[in-house]
Length: 319
Image (cartoon, rainbow, N blue to C red; front, side):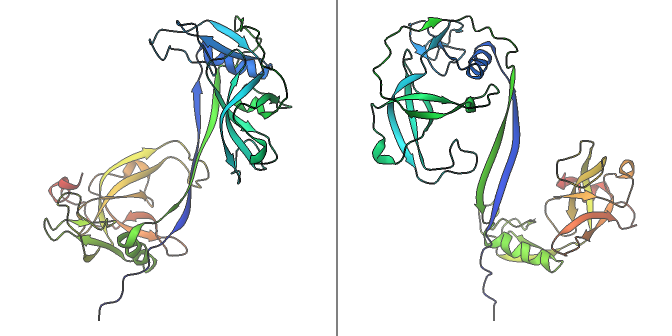
């Protein structure tokens, strides 16, 4: 009797990294201005004032450099209520995302509006900037927007040279993605197999290639791969690289070797770290075997088996 397929696994996953970028003269002036409680826009060839400013005219692609100062008050052009703020958002309590056209600008700026509830927000309402107590030259120097009963400021944008002491020339923006990952039935079976220290692939019924990890279908033939095959545990290093930069939160001393390893019986190579041998002795064709993690859920790394190196012709199609 065939066992029923396991329920597909699900787990939360976070991808996070710092994004570092340098700033051109317009963005540098804009962010430095926020640090100094000054909002700068840029004037286009047609005379429109863009806030936030850009360095090239969106209509003509001409380079833009004419900076102007606009007001810190403005008008909401559209909005959406956010009942459950997420990590890293401007406010910890429910707020409205709004597009606000600051007085003197022709385009709208996206930011958070501190309001007691959605009934307190409307298109056309007047708001002003609430500055952060500590400012560093980032969009977060605007802590949020707040309701402000006033008439529209009819003062024309004032020319500004964009010069400040100690200008901001670069920013580091954290990028983070939180999501729930499900590997699907094929990789669920693969992961359950690893828990038993077995490596399970799936064979394509058309081309006979064995995929590890399995994908549920052959990407070449486009047919389902339902025939499960145990491969390895030993394999052959096909290609490799020497890592010399230590990764954050990874307790592995550099240099170390990361390799493509073709497990015996598999139709393509998978990734794995090579240990138990000096990094400068790792080579193509090296025969290796898995060393399992302490909890036995996956191979921590691969080490040499002591066998003679594999002949190049046996793995050249897997490079």
